[in-house]
Length: 408
Ligand code: SF4
Ligand code: SF4
Image (cartoon, rainbow, N blue to C red; front, side):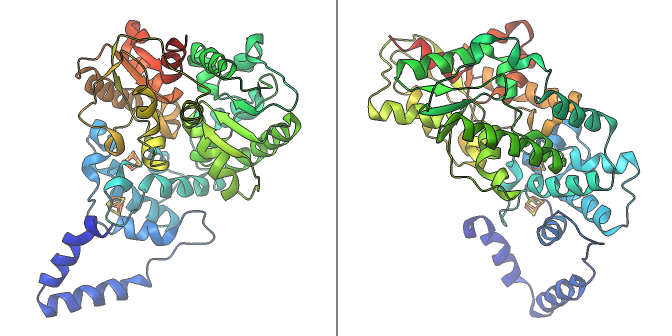
């Protein structure tokens, strides 16, 4: 962290003594004005630090990049959010309340921030405060109702229309928790995950007909009560399954089950793995062997959550490196510097045009490697790239499909 901020420290020490003194006095003197009105979910201390920053992460923000509007730059969003929290701006004005939502929660800002702040994470708290004040768009209210009524971010039939998704085993090794987006948009990857688990001799249950959305999307846009409701239901289901380990095909679900539930006060002792983390372990243990050649050229897109929330840029590459015949071409922006697919932060619900524009930018970057296939390990990224690909959507591949193809 010091490496990122060292230039600021140097700048400060290069100030003339009188200027440095004024700077410190001004910062300390102004501190007392930086107060919220009433109770707030948002972390006000970090919100103030972010809004006072000269926007050093600005170049990375995908929302700013596609809109080209200063009001969507990270520190500007923090400033507007701060004035909403303090009561200077009216959140009942839909133009104001919309601004904290123009963010895909990609954590690109945090990667570059000298203070390790994520504007996106701060805005989650602001959105919870907006929901508490009933200042959210009808699109988001409809989304919340849909999740509560259907138990998925899509329709009631996402899981029930496919009986093959519903697997029940007694005291299984793992609970395979399918993400809503994977089941709805990439069912072939769900089947690939099941085939891999079977091949490795791992017993599993899905209880697909009863499982609910993890609640992560609702939490991201501020509906914490919905997330609490879904967390209680899912944890009861996991307990009933008898499994002690949860494997999920969606990094956002993994983050919710692993971290958000605990942040919202739910204690549990489940080990939560992404499919990539779990399959890497199986390969290391020798229970999963990738011996069949896959003679293709691919590029790999690091999902924001695995690269910048979990700091894991090695597991997927370790797996890809074991597949005979596979050629990996890294994109220019890769690993921790990966760029957003546009689908995070439920953006496709509240800002569909911008969400698709972000996805298209990244899709073009990935294809400029010359690779035939884009491989990733997140159903939301896959959805974003499949929209960008149009009729070429078969070029977008989940890593599970590739692993399944490499098993004899
Ligand atoms: S996230 Fe960090 S670098 Fe970006 S505007 Fe906020 S404080 Fe500044
Ligand atoms: S999380 Fe991503 S979209 Fe949101 S402010 Fe930071 S860089 Fe921009």
